[in-house]
Image (cartoon, rainbow, N blue to C red; front, top):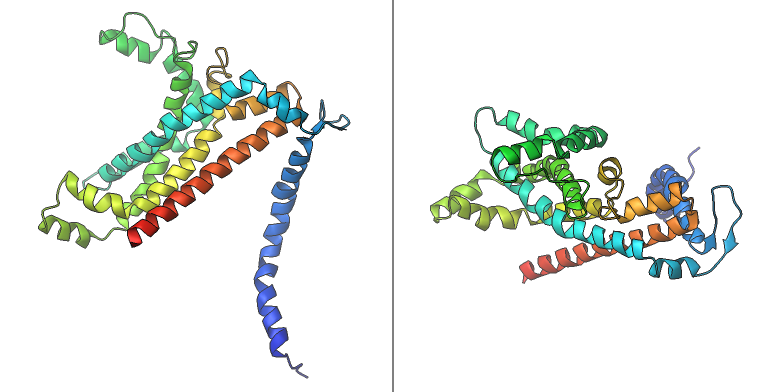
Length: 302
């Protein structure tokens, strides 16, 4: 016997079916992301000295401590500087590389592989290798000395003037190939007819990229800007492997400071407070990028 299903029952089934498919993923996300995030938020209002210790409610004391913490403001400044320097490079340089390797030339796939190779290299291996290169008697200083640019070796990782920028160079080196692939996918989606029509109108050479490539690549530029900004805000491995945040906190980022408070000083509640500030910064960056992107789309529509 077949049971007759009313229209209301059918409508309810249609509404519930997508959520039933999403339920396993939501359960996993709840157990691994949402519940721990809520617990971390609760810990920002408590005081706990170690992982097994008792919790004491302290209200906003951790936030007051954070506002008076000079090391936190130093690490926040380093993180903002990281954003200002690294993100523009990772938005523009990979696009130039993608345009270069998008040419139909013999052996171009080898160039693509060479530019992408740093992406697949472990950050641990890359950090150790760059540590050797940055030594005062390392390859970089020897090369600069042989060219007559410098007389003495530069302390790339042991000087407060150079340490942070030396770490930035590794981040850029690791990220160029990754973002190049994103841009390459966008470039290959642009029909060749568009460039042919532009060349007939006199837009050729570098100008065709200004007139055609940049406007059509705007969604990819926005995507890379968001991803690279969030990655620069959360940078940790390079600092941990190469400088340990030194010298004198000159290369310490906010994520490294969070790690230091949680796993070195065992200040779990204070580390959660720093994590909350980091979350708000990343959220603000994402919302700002979405607002700017929507504004640009509406402007083009007008």
